[in-house]
Length: 301
Image (cartoon, rainbow, N blue to C red; front, side, top):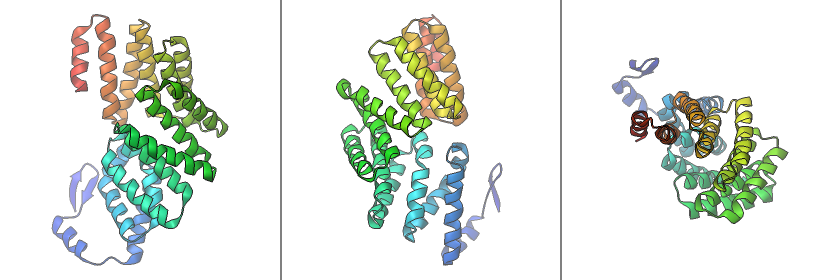
């Protein structure tokens, strides 16, 4: 054994190479796959723990694909959604979603297919490929409606709303977020409810309705704190900072951005840390704190 990092060990390369050449017994493969599938399920929100296991997880997915453990592959790829999205591993996630989709079509699982289409759409959305995202999400929505899969339906509506928001389709954006909010509330899906409220807050903010924006985002923030959804809590905090800064309340805006920054650093989410640093830099510059603003702006790069 060799120490690869604190608390992390690996086989010596020669032993690894020898073991790799030996055929594995079917029960060994199954035990390996079940172990890492359970690990992902248990650690879905512990992204730093999954960081350490990424290579092992990818090896497990390859084995599951190769040996046609369809249900296990589909479920594990689904459970990796939050982690891979937070780490910006969009191309990697898209690859495994497409492989899982093939197994889903083979097994005829329409609800799993709806979820897969929804997640593929979210990946395309994050990559800025809006037409492809819209098509995938619309297809996912139709399959979800046919299967009466209400949670997936709400998720598709939420992300179709995100596309409308990013592309400036103001006619549909509020309707889509409101439909998603109603569905999430019906399902008592608190995470989804908070995301829809946060989105409606941003819509109100864009229209200059600052008080309504603050009301919606603060509701989202309260829910996220109740359910201990740290990343979403950080997002709500930095969105509050945006609204407060546009109201001229720069000092409070800075406080909210700093709270968000602490969360994103704790989670290791570099993408959200960077955007929050930019927002923080703007608020500091408005108070004439230019050296601090420059330092944060440079860190965001």
